[in-house]
Image 1 (cartoon, one colour):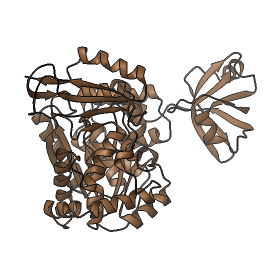
Image 2: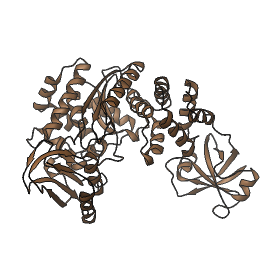
Image 3: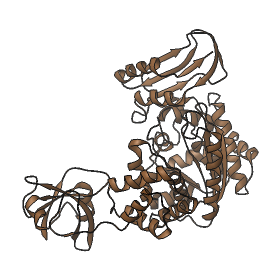
Image 4: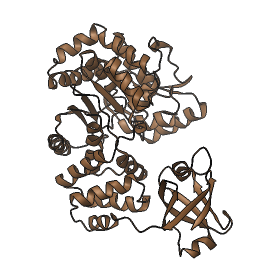
Length: 493
């Protein structure tokens, strides 16, 4: 059926949607949510049908923004060929997994291919993810899923040098080790193309914090140029489409915070392999309020990472770190960036715990790649070489290399929480800290967040400053005050 294309200014950010007039839909015996293939010259897409009596006229087909951009050029879309499309081949594999059966390599590869090409809708994909939550993926399934994500995603080639990387499973506010480790390792002569994430449920991801100092979205050619000049970059991985199947699955997982182990492992390892990493350090923070809350779970995850790494030809080192409290003092993009710059500049205000953990990780990476140890990492940091390298990275990513950490704009509305009794700090609740910082406006409001003045083990008197909340919006700041009485933040005993 030939129909005239019409743009509908709506975006799903997920499945491709086309709207047909009821009369045209009836001619093809189409029902809502059926699939159609739409062809324009040498381009074609598979879209899900919505049906309207009045939204589009007979002889027209409305395309949501996502579909329109894939088919039409320069805001012009003329006659389109519309045909009925069969259900994706991987529907059988999804049903199979729903009954707890193991998927073979071909089934997994077909599923990933169809996810990448938008042939599975969000409902079908959510059933697959639910099945993974219920029955899990065994080692072979996880490895096949990882390899499939690599094969059907983009890859970056940085040559045959010693390419290194790191990743944290997360759950700990701040913990901004990447922005200290990368310049240390790059100054030692290793290549570290660091693709980082933005915040989903935290006050800031590494990409959000780095964006305070320099742009984190660049085309591939620019990234290669940055790395050629500096040995490293710190960019947002979401703009790279390195494992697009994983990115689409994350959108479905997010509303219910579903984190099936097999999907987490394949997500992390596929993105490391996509940039050619050969030496990878994985940090698993362990704590009650982190993603990994038992030592048994942490050890199991450690073994899985190492096993998958071997299958992909990577050397993996896994550390299980203390995730019982935030790492660093600032929480929120600007406050975290300030912590990082203070450490790199050798300022006494730089948090000692963040510095210590960063040096440990950098030292391990250097040792893995045969370029030194923690002692060398410390020398690079304290000599100013790491700061010099970070300035170089900031410059080539388009930021101001001479930015003064003291001039970074924090939220001008503040509220300080003080101790109401004398005692010792025995607990700092990661989840509550993150919740307060996000309600204050982080990460969208870069200057919003929390600055901690205490750590576990500190002794305080009545009236001592425990932490300060920052926000650009007074109403948001007032909303955080309601949290203090409902959620435990800092416990003094």
